[in-house]
Image 1 (cartoon, one colour):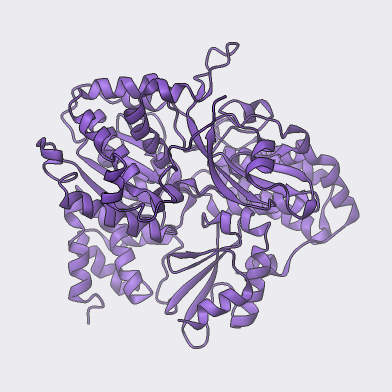
Image 2: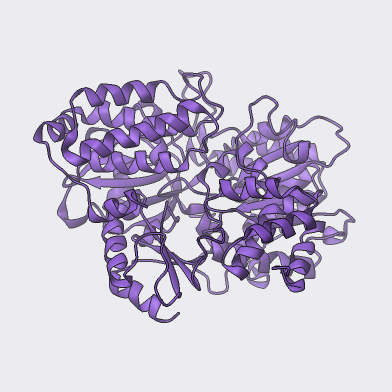
Length: 444
Length: 157
């Protein structure tokens, strides 16, 4: 493979990378100008043919999603930008917004032209204060320069982008939870269908796209669909449902590595390559015991599975839920999987929105069971009990509205399946590993 | 006595044109009030509801869903310090950082220091994982934290 050149992150190290002048000096908004002369349907076809799949976690083909909008709808049609990036260990969207806001804004404008929308909302998580301020500044600059507002680039087309701040709730990253939250309600995900493309924000047709996805859209317009398809992994010929894993991807590397970072690489790099070639190797001269492939919802790869390619298919073949957000977290050989499992269970118990009983009760009980085990009061049967609870919650067994609960179940299922001897040994030893910090939080 | 100043009301009204209905201004309005008053009291909920032409219970329903917003029984200090407890930070000392910070500030998670300067909390993943352990001071991230660095941050408040 030819030397890979980062594209999405090409500008992030430049001084002044967030200013409109600096962005335009690098050819910014030329893609939008080109697109404004094209028919919206042609833009959608171009994006569809590039093979771009959503970067937020589900990997749904982006252009195909756009085609689900009703034809000849009188409007309004909305674009909701999912910048609620809350999957543990994921921070690639933050970097894109903090360092190159105009790449995102141009991607949004291109998408809005394609889907015939005049209004976009960026739903940004509260914890990203710098992103919020950077985006607001960039949007103001665009209004002053006639790139946004009532006469986009002199074409007479209207486009407004509003930034809407979240309030620290993981569920708002689920697309219909996000919509409910934007409407001013509790973020309870909606039953689908209707999908947002038919009835979404304010009951109007709505496309929800992730930040990185929209940045890819801008690059596809600049460089062409063929360029995008020349990167990554083509569809598996033995799997007629595989849409391929094309394009560059931002991988986050965190946990027990020497150099935690975010790195842009072609889709399909392996977990081992990420750790050794980009994360500086496992810290303290240790080895990796487990690796989270794409946020904790995706489960774990064991040490024997580190050569799994992190494309849209690889993690699933290794028993994980999927590629997720491509946020790779390394757990070293000195760390107890029981403690890692507890951390995952605690997260989902805290973040379940409470709407569906199997999730609300299941996440809470899984946390309590692992909590008891960590207090030295575990029983071997607890592992089977955990498997039973995990197996009964989620879209896959058909008991919940959204996928949060599948994500809550997956680390439990993977940990018990792949690390059972270690977990049993922990229980038999009667060890206690509750930290003072965990104790303080438990009583909060 | 109304608790929302005219300035706060004006800032809330300025959000109206951004949305097709006033209900969507619920979160922006709560943020405006919460940032300024460090709490959203029952009276503030009533006044926001009146501005948004909603029933106060609708505002309360949304507000209580997001544990983020504090009511009048649990007002925030001058600043809010969140210590991340999720996996990337936990693996690099996040829980120890929280415990040590509690000790140094003489508070438990959720409490405010005696001088009213800082409310300490734990947070789920803040998205600053390349700089784990990380903390959030109001809405600004600080990476690669140690108890000393946290203490220094707090001392500048």
